[in-house]
Length: 574
Image (cartoon, rainbow, N blue to C red):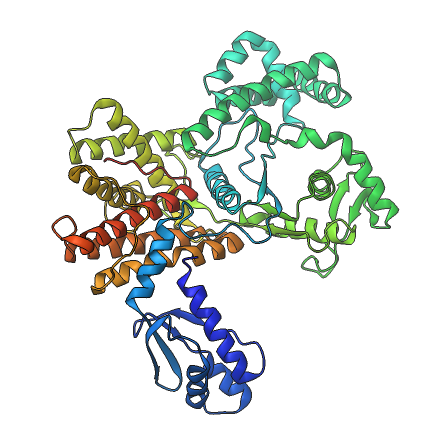
C-alpha cells in the first residue's frame, strides 16, 4: 500500500526483464544522488557483454515511471537515479495514514511457527546470560504474530535430571514450607547453593540424592509432588522476571525437558527402525552426515547412553519431531547462543535423515552472541558470579528515575515511576536488539540511558515530544487527510523514511535481524528532528500546517509501532 521501494522495484524489474529477456533483480536502493538508485545495468552488462550505459538507457525507455518519478537520470557508467514526485509521496503517505497497520499488509502466506527461547533452569535464578534469548525471542514473537502467523511459544526450561535429587533432599531437610518461602521470594540461587554445599560435604546426603533421582525417574508420587513444588515456585519467579521485561511468555508456554520423558523411547525405536542408530562405546548414537571430529572421524549425537539413560540429543530430537508432526509447524526457530550452533545443526540434519524435517518445513538457529563487561570478558559481579537479571534491571530503572526527575520534575510520583520503568527496561532491551545479534556487546548503562544517539531513551523522547505538539495545541491527529503536501527537502526526507517501514518489516521477518529495525527507527527519529527544526508546524498555515501535523503523527505512530515490535514501551509524556 505504502511501500514506495517495492513499487519502484516492481516497475524497474519489469523494464529490465523486457530488455534482458530474463528476470533481473533491479537492485533498487536509497541513494545520496537521488531518492533511489538502480545499479543492475552494470551486472547485466557483464553477463551480456554489452555497454552498461546503453542497457540503462534502454531500461529507462522501457520503464513506466511517469506516474511515480519527477526525474529519472542516468549517471556514471550506468546508474539509474530515481527522484520520486512530490504528489506521489503525498498520496502514498495519505494511504499509510488511513491504515492502522501503517501500510504494511499481513503476510501473503501465514504459517505456523514455533519459537524456542528463554529456557532458564528451574531452581536457579535468571541471570544476564538469559537476557538475549528472552528478548530476541520475544521480538520475534511480536513481529511474526503481527504479520498474521500462528506463533507457538516454547519455553524449554531445564527442570529434569540429576540435580533435582539433590534439591528435593535439601527441600526435605529445611522443610517444605520454609523451602517454598525461600523460593517464592526469589532466592533460588541461595537454595541451590545450600543444597550443593551439603551434597559436596555429606556422603549420606549424596546417597539420598542419588536414590531420590531414581525415585523421580520411576515416577514415585511423593518425589514427584516435591519436584512439582520446586518447579512450580521456579515458574512463579520466572513469571515476575518476564513481567518486568515485558515479554509475552506465560505459564502455558512452559514445555520443559520432563514433558518429553515418555517420548524418548519411541524416538530411539523410530531411529533404530530407520537404520540410523549405531553403537559407539556402548552408547546408541546417530552420526548425521557432514559432521566430523578434528581427526576426521564422524561426530556422534548420543541418543541413549551406555547406562540406558537418554542424552540431551534424545530430548532435542523428540522436541523437533513433536513440533513438526503434532504442532504442524512449518518454521521452527531456536533462539539459542551461537556456541550451540553445531549441536542444533546436527539435530536438524538427523531430523532430515529421519524424514521429519522436509520441505516446506525448515528449522533455523537464531544464534546470538554474549554480553560482556567493560573488560571485554563475560559480564560478572566483582565476586566473579553471573549478574542477576533482576539486579541489572533494578539498577537501570533507578538510574532512569534520576534522569527523568531531572528532565521533567513536574511529573507526578506514579507517572515518574512508570516512565522510569519504561526508560530503564527499554534502554537495556534496545541496547541488545540494536546490536547485530551474532555479535557480542559491552554492557554500558551510561551509554544505554543516554538521551542522544542510537538509544531507546532518544527514540522514546522523540515520540513523547511529538505527542506534546498535539497536547499543547489541544488538537487530535487527522487520520484521514484528503491530501498531504510534501515540498521542503526535510519533508521529503521524512516522507521517504516513513514509506520505507513496510519493506523493512518484511525483510526483518525473514532474517530476524532486529538491529536493522532499530537503526531504521533511529534514522526516522533523526529525520524528524531535522524536519522539526527546519519546518515550522504549529506556526504554519492552511494545508501546509495540516500536512506537517500528519507527518508528525505518522512519525509518532511509526516509532510506537516499531518500538512495540521490539517489546519496548513508548510513554506519551516524559
